[in-house]
Length: 244
Image (cartoon, rainbow, N blue to C red; front, side, top):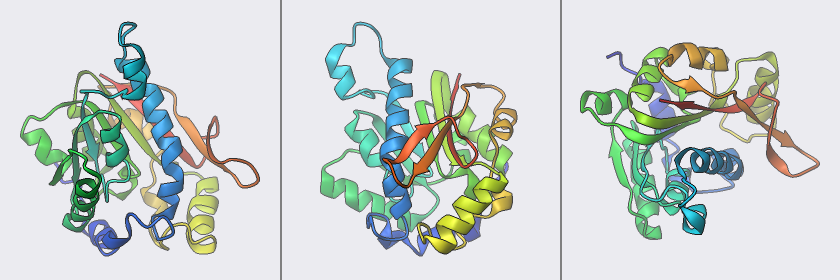
């Protein structure tokens, strides 16, 4: 299986590992995005995994007992909330420094998460599969998009779910997510994203044809309103769910 990791990308984010849990630091934009991303995951997973008999407890812990993989977990910004939702969680990243930051936070918070410094293709070779796989803001940083999608979809067990979030490759995204967010607003480190590596929803469908994909959902920023919200506008940030 083709390698998915891009050493330059790993080095870039490893150098910032100490800043993962600083909401005013270089990952501040992800902290602000997190409530919307988690709302989407909670809503999609609740519909997918819940039964009419699951009751109120399932609403409080919608991922209770669900074997879950947080793929490209970074410092654990999504891993920690997934664990609090009840997920039986494995979280992986190719950066040892990021895994160290994630593990330190989880231990301090008393969260039981199996953190591993490894890759998606290594898990595939081990025959691992999960009921839920999340891959948030990672696909635009890999070396081979199709290899990553192939590995990610292979990690989804029958009846399972893959949830991706990323930035669309559009002129609007170039203006807002790269020029605006990185160079002007300083919401992300300059150079964090390469426009040519951004991925469209159609490319995701083509790269993972074994999954049945929902229509993408947009995430937009309302500067005079409620901040980040779920919307129909997928021109910049979007999320997608695929089912096996």
